[in-house]
Image (cartoon, rainbow over all chains, first blue to last red; front, side):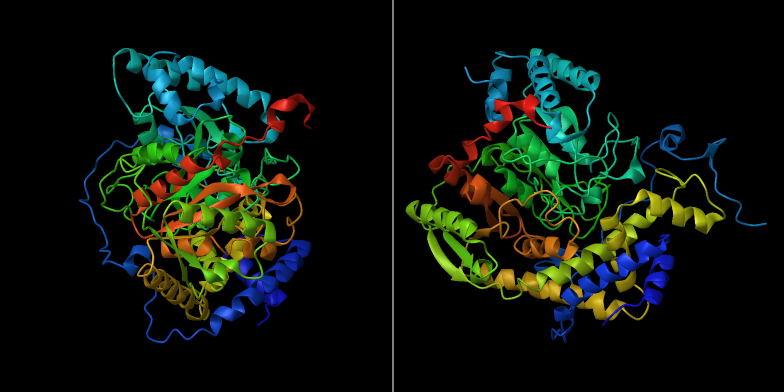
Length: 99
Length: 495
């Protein structure tokens, strides 16, 4: 399998990454080099094998853990917004989305 | 009397308790030393006032007679843990200057145990890398040879401990990021069982693999730190295990008579450098002298762990890193048009090359039409790899082999070859995928006098056994006590 420059543009769009012309070309080479490495994996017979998401699921049942939906701490808006790029009156500013 | 920086954590604890030295004196000593050796590139953030305030607070607790396990001991944190008192960057431009409103659980627990924070340590961007060369900020240098990499991604942690600029440090390990730099820098590190240590406040890379652990000079010190770090965090990390905290120092010293050490034949193939092999063979013979029995085992999918890991980790990373959009925190591009353009430019500017590559791979393998063939297939083989370990543990109690195929390489040597970097992770990835605890302990020196690490892998929750197996080796050998003498020979001469 080989990716094309068209694939790179599509994936970059999905990933919300702007890639310049030169960067796209390098990305294509590197990604194709990487996917050569992955080919071996695709040939493995995995019929009947359950995918493993939580590693300890290999030896025990891992139940999804839920907790009470109760407020346990005060939200400090000022501290939380301290590192935001643009804030006004406690709101995060973004470019206009709806005209 | 030995210099403060030559003492282990256990020895420092004893000195502090006996009031032979104050926490403030210890903190000042290490701050001065870290500054004098700044050219090694271990630190990303330091703040003397904060550190000394914490040290004075430890002195008050000591004066009041409090007995906390690490009271007054300086520890530096990998800059992947968020901290209120220092900026947290994950080694990325994306988070330059980021001030967390809270402390990671690991940071909070170590502070509770009395540790004094020496600041934040260099690492590969978002913990992606095995040479620390992906740090957006600065080069970290191996104290044994400043022209070589310290390993990664917890490179700064390994440098700080090996050069004795900090008695201990925290690290994180997703595919080997504690074990490999520990091996390259000749120190001791343990990656616990997945879920032993809370991931809360650890800047996420691959959530089903990320695990925090201590890095120090001895197994005993790692045991002390891990005891303080581990334990359930049910309200904040839904994958943290319910295992209660444990005192890992309690079992240190038990005999290894009759211990069955599994030696995976796949770890000793053609890819293993002869100098590393010689050091590992020597360590295995040492264990035999201590009464352990060597058993040949097979981990047949060792090679497959590379593609499996490099599908799963980027998939999870692409999802985790989607939060960096220039809205709530972190970098935002200066010039942009609409919202999507802002996202795309912000992410293009904020992320480095390796992070972008992994986001691209992850996005692709999770995209419509490719999910089953890549991501799901990788997760299925992941289970087969985990099952292979369970098969192996029927024949042995711990597994031993090399951490990495070679000693630390030269800076720049593999910088533009991601696949070469990935291949070098072959021996650490299997235990990561299976979620098993793994260690690296110094076991000799290879080419150019660079350290070699022995990897020990235990079954789930077998950290106590692993630490004892490491501790007994350190009682019988002195590799962990060797120091990179050049560090103190001419610190000002280094560029």
